[in-house]
Amino acid sequence: MRVAEKAISNTVYLFMQWIIVTFFSFIYWLIAGKLLLPSDYGKVSTAFQLINLINLLTAFGLGGTISKLVPVYASKKEFGKISSLVRNCLKFSFTAAFLAGILFLLSYPFTSPYLKLDFFTYFLIFLGILSARIHSIFSITWYGLQRMDKMAKVSFAIQLIKVISSAMLIYLGLKHFGPIAALVFCFLAGILLYFNPSFIEKPKKINFKRILKELSFPIYLGALGWILVGNTQYIILTILKSVKETGIYSLAFTICSQLAIIPMTFSRALFPLISILSEKKQKETQSKLLTYALKYSLLIGLPSIAILYFFRNFIVLFMARKEYLEASRYFALLAPSALTFGIANLLCVNLLALGYPKVFRNLRIFIAILYFLTALTFTHFYAGMGLAISYALLSLIYFFSSFYLVNKKVRIKIGKINLTKLLPIFIIFSFLLFLIDQAKLNIILKFLLFLASSLVYLFLSKTFVLTREDERVLELIVKKARQKFLKLKQK
Image (cartoon, rainbow, N blue to C red):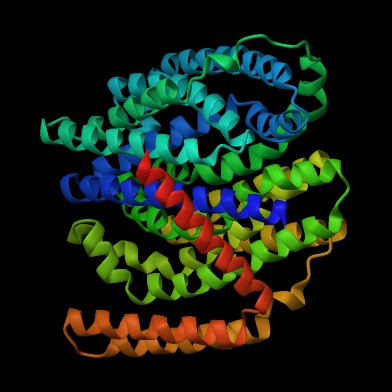
């Protein structure tokens, strides 16, 4: 029961962090969408992906190493090893990020005609690469220590800084420079708030070279798949087509990709626990945790797909100007694909937690190769829609591959997910939303009918899908959430 309670505690805090990040990101991109033209929006999206791409390429699997080893060290009270691990990771990854950033700046004369960015944007990207790398090491150390409460509070502070500074800089006339500079401020603030002297004090000797060889590099080779799939879409579209096309597509992808965060939240909550349980050979508990994660991802994710699809035009116009309305045509592919990709990633990442880094690596490399073959080909012929088709195909292949490999190691109990009951309820909910969308009613009446349809979905799910065991888990979640909220409120 203690493992279940810890899993719930982690999930509650990570869900709170997700709400914080999603809310502020929504405001952040809403401001950009309302105040920037599609071409400027496309430049911001391209710069973001370049920062993320180079940051992750210079990580060399150290983030996964920290998240895998820190919970194990902490469970054994070996805090000196944590300090030594963090120190070595900081030195290694910052050096790599600095060199990569310098090379990126030097590439300006050759790459700027393709990326369509000016030199000052290149310099901001350089600063973003350095600050993001240090921020990542500190934040993931807190994650490994399972201090999700700390992560939620810091996320609130730095996201607030990002939104306020971005709005101010755009207001001052800095156009696309404003949101990019605000991202750098966000990372710098995160470094200050996440830093703890104990991370670098009193180190105990570890064989860091062996860790790099046996854990970090296999993780890194596997992570390349995720890095390339998640952080090159806008770059490919910008190079092959235009920043305007990228701006429109990136708005749709930014909205729909929020669905992937649902299973990813469960994945992040379970990863440290699955790692510890692997050490103790408790496969039955691992199986139960992964089955619950799949079930709740679908229970929340499926109705979210329907909501995004049927209210896509309203969402796009709410998020941006009317020039972006074309983005709504991507929702039919991107919304279900984002949830599928998120669930696939939940399973794939836990291959690493289960103790199979080479299987994890091989699957990610396979996905990366497939991604480039499909993304470049389809984007060349069909522009943004081609990229969406590529993402949809990739999500399905990634899901079935991940499920097959995880199920070989730890049996996932499909029967407990109750798919035969959940899918008809989802179809009923989708049909109700379709009727609401087609009805010629004012927005207030539509909103009230939407609430009524949501209640129908919840009632049917509780009656036919959720078991007594699920209800006990949900009661624990509500109890923990109330306790955490009151604790944060008192502080």
